[in-house]
Image (tube, rainbow, N blue to C red):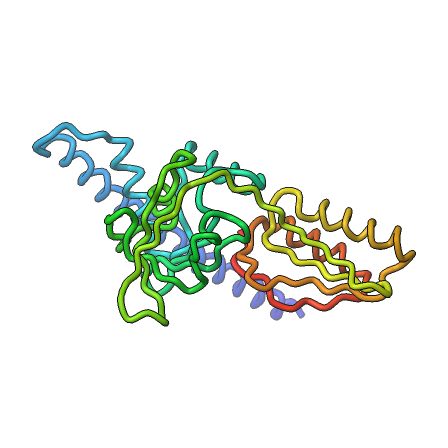
Length: 262
């Protein structure tokens, strides 16, 4: 028994030793790369032909680093993050579209119902190759959003490629105040309810609860509930979870899967 314990103890020490060597090696490699970054930054600051904004350079480096991961990981400055929070409040200025980067191309996931983009005829799957004649090639989602944003009443031109059209199409959209009604309730009679959830914003779960309470007040119970998520581009993860929890104890049918929740 003593020999077994000794052997086990040696194995544990061996594992710890290997782990320590790996961590030290990893730290040294990371330190070396950071040294290279610091050297390049210093060379630019000293010898570039014009004076540079160090903060802008570092933010650019961070954006470039995250582009190496996937199209959905982006760096937001404080100002951009503030705008993002505004968009998930349910009312904001813009076009009303959800976008993604697919195969390196800026692609419309879905126009939000009853918004300027919806009215202008933007369709899911449209590939945006230019915004106001500026190519979208290489843009991140955050950068593309900044090009699209603007004052209410101003126009923006999206050049899109659509499968049903042989040539690119220019769509002019007037920016407006986007008010999202994320829960649309329909009484199907006999105790059955249909609810269309267009996106997941701050008040989605509360609005769904109000709709179901209204239905129960009228019919005394819910015989069946259809939650329609088709063309729902996603939104706030906590709201998607609350909606799921709310419907879990009831009889319901989800017509489409949840996508792009963030």
